[in-house]
Length: 124
Image (tube, rainbow, N blue to C red; front, side, top):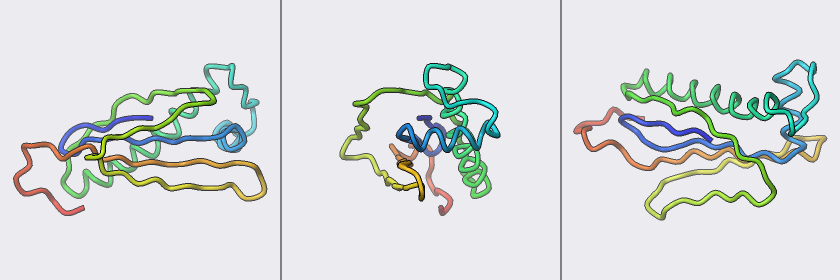
């Protein structure tokens, strides 16, 4: 997961099962490394995937007049990780399935709030 701060505040997360992580990692590494979840370099690839998505989002919002920065990504690994949000948070979750594999993943965009110093926000 990673956060964004500035005129808009919130976060992005990408939740992957092992099969989908293997598909993503194989694409990112060009097939040169195995998707070994005990290897910290391999695990950091999940953060890099989100960095690429968040960077593209930040550029698009910047072109629309929003100033924002991304926080460094954080990677969590385990069988019982859950995402939680306050009722006041706005978020949407995009579920995906990778055809031909057991791969499933969920991409979440969460908006915590708009910064108080924006009087006339640009349209999204």
